[in-house]
Amino acid sequence: MLKRILSLFLVLLPLQAVAAADRVALVIGMGGYAHVEALDNPVNDAAAVADTLEEIGFKVTELIDAPLQTLLETLEDFAFRSETAELALIYFAGHGVQVQGENFLLPVDVEPRSNDDLRRQAISLDTLLAVVDRARRMRIVILDACRNNPLGGGIALAGDAGATDAGGARGIGGGGGLAASSPERGTLVAYAAKGGSVALDGVGGNSPYAAALIETLPQPGVEISLMFRQVRDKVLAATGSRQEPYSYGSLSGTPFYLAGPAAGQGTLPTENFVAAWSALPAEKEPELIALAETGDTRSMVALAARRMNPGGDFRPADAVTWYERAAQAGDPQAQFQLAKIYEEGLLVTGDPARAKALFEASAAQDYADALNDVGFFHFHGQLGFAKDPALALDFFRRAADQRHAKAQHNYAVLVDRGQVPGKGPEEAADYLYAALRSGVTEVLINLQEKPELFSRETRAALQRRLQERNFYSGAIDGSFGPGTERGLRRAFGLEE
Image 1 (cartoon, rainbow, N blue to C red):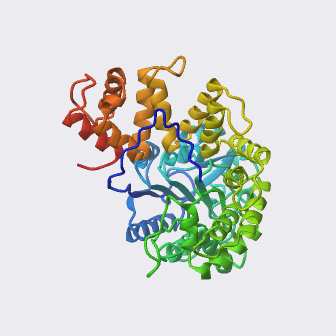
Image 2 (image 1 turned 135 degrees about the horizontal axis):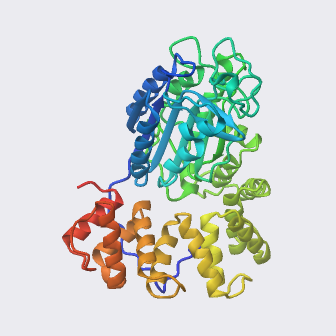
Image 3 (image 1 turned 30 degrees about the vertical axis):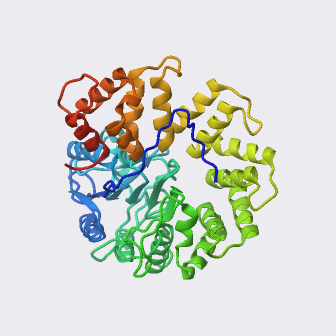
């Protein structure tokens, strides 16, 4: 596969072993509400989910029956720790309501008298998404919070018919529930009940959704998309099809196992998604096919990857077919992968015009790999793209802002060398710091071993970034001694 690296200014040193970022979770249970209807199971649900996540290797922060201020402080701390995590997960059990299409999760001290009060006294789903947004690989928000309207008739909530569920519910009655979500790519929002419907609180020790999670999460060898499918099936069975969980958003392209690989499965590759999906046991493929037939484009891409493995089930025509189906459904990763196939003449007759259109379609959806490649094409005037360095810089910036690993570093170098109008050492330092927090190993190694690649002004600005975030306490002089190197490692997420 071709790599879009502007070798003129990207210096890669050999990768050294560095500690992998942890998986972190924030588990929130709100049941003892002071001014609205209390709920029986959220505290039990949160405690059980927290224990389960700890058992499978998560570093868990547990927050029970917290007021708004405590919740806000905890979210701020978790957001900072999430930046150096491989995966950041938030689980919320408690009251959730929808106000004019926006979802809010209620702390225990909520006492609103109007929609405006509610917005000030509760936490929006958008806030939770922002908290996990900068995790390096995967972001998950799980809401067991589609419960009945606890606010009575005093506040008009969109879609609330004022009904309640006799079994205890976690959503607005009368077909209300939480609004459907549209998170960014790489983020999954899992609802206990699909948007607009109600989730049950349960009559036992846990809600039906929490019980399914607790049973399913610890199973090794279950890929995450298939895991949530199993949770859905268990909840449907437990509730007589009264409650159907639903997930919104899209996960990263490579498979992920929350409880690790199954016995004998070995360590799964993560950088090469063809190899990673090919490592999925053959007996799991029917589940992928079933998901793909529901329109799940990630499963289509996974099946295409499996058909591209020369050492496995190599069926190139099938691979192209799965990619075509996902690309036509608008999946930007499939569009990108198919673009490379047509550009390189791999598996099909080369078609530069088709490749260009697919690269453009993927980049139009802000898919970072496509943004970086389109920038490369404009920089060099290749594949039918006009040679336009200014436009290329904009694509590189957009890729960097999407936390594309190499683009962050490349763009920092371009800024540092004065090739980006209106930007200088301060902006270069911002991108270098972001690349460190994103886990770009090459940046850490280069800054430690070849700091002279960057101007003294940029190095000093980076020292200020480290100092502002309490990673460094030495002089701001652009000289990278042991203190600065220690600060760089800490910013990267390596503990001293």
